[in-house]
Image 1 (cartoon, rainbow, N blue to C red):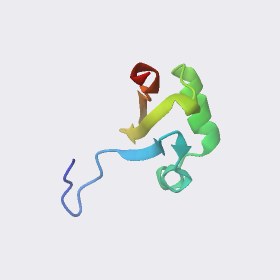
Image 2 (cartoon, one colour):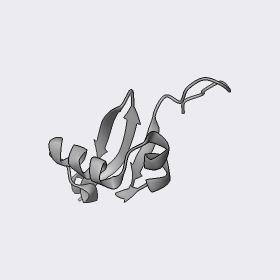
Image 3 (tube, rainbow, N blue to C red):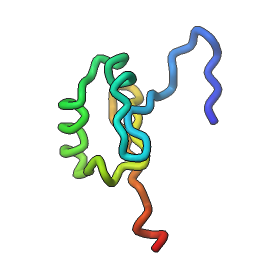
Length: 71
């Protein structure tokens, strides 16, 4: 959990959760799905394999889904 006081900038904004793109948050950040796909490709990631991705300081941080480790 992260606590952000009212008026302070958000620490990070979630743009993918459980392989689902949050287009509203992308729009708030001034990005689109083409940018997100490009960044995922640059990082060698596929949308279907992303548990969570967030933008912090204009950088995409990706946390892969570890479902393969649960088998």
